[in-house]
Image (cartoon, rainbow, N blue to C red; front, side):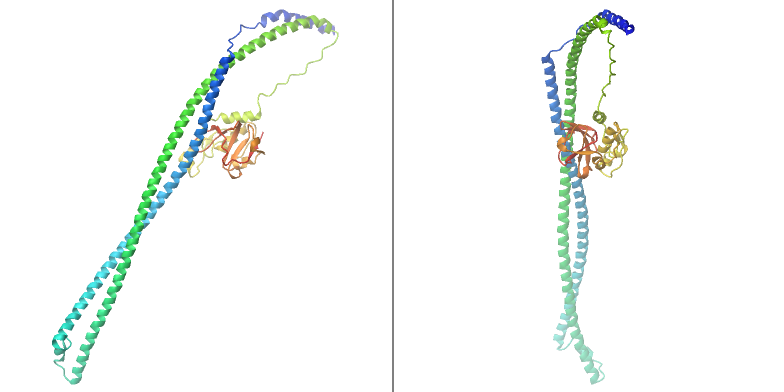
Length: 437
């Protein structure tokens, strides 16, 4: 027992002798006042509040921009419909015009035929009156060879007269029918012209509505860009304010560490001196071995997930993009994503960002928000905490984001945007969050 007490006493005595040399505290660093630190924090808080306000306004502006984009698409389709209807009406009007022209020609021809027949009948009647018999009766009787032949010729002349009257009636009926056809054709033409005029007006109205919608969309896009520029500028000012506060707080922390180091140095010197004085008395009883020191983990799984998601801020949105290793080229969606070039651009969609974030803690999610919604434990939305997933749409199949706490989330929102931090949108949100950790 005494064999190890003597070295301990020697070691303690040596430590006391060297402590004042090797552990001397450096001169004190700058120590900013509480007022300076408070003013810096207030400035940073004001900038953060402004960023939050701009973020909310930008979210609303982008939502309105999406609505106007949908309106533009709708008015484009209405304009296409109006042009198709106009072409159809023009075709009907052209056919009605040709039919009316043909009916007019036939009616004119029938009228001329009636007039010609009426003239011939009038001439026949006049000549018969002058001769006191049917036209041609005198000449018809010349050369008759017998009374029977003479009677037959008289009957023939009577039949010719009656036939002319019947023919006139037929021509009159034909003229009336053609006139009716002409009238019907003109009525059809008038209706077709009205339809064409209405279709033409509808096309002009549709084009005007499309132009109005496009202008509104462009104006809203410009407003959103302006808000984004303002938000970027204020975020830069916030970063500067935070750095300033961090600098002041860092100086204060450094000063506090200096005080702690000096206090520990004094305490250590006193402790070593007391140990050296009590070493002989303690030699009779062996000291119990110290338990091993266990280091606390440097961070939680939730913070790992959050850090991986936040590390992707600014990465563009690509529909179908992202996997366990990071952003990837998107895929075609046959619509908005294709228009923004998602299928050849590297980025994340909403569920791809969740795949990457949770892969950092060994959780491998499928690339579909509806499946991700059912991948963990459901908790009421009011109990959501940092690291939970939030979902929108039936079965969570429309959108997913990672909750950061304090009403904020990180998400890959939609084509044409990028990974961002935004306030939680409660419209259409699912009543439960999904907790994996």
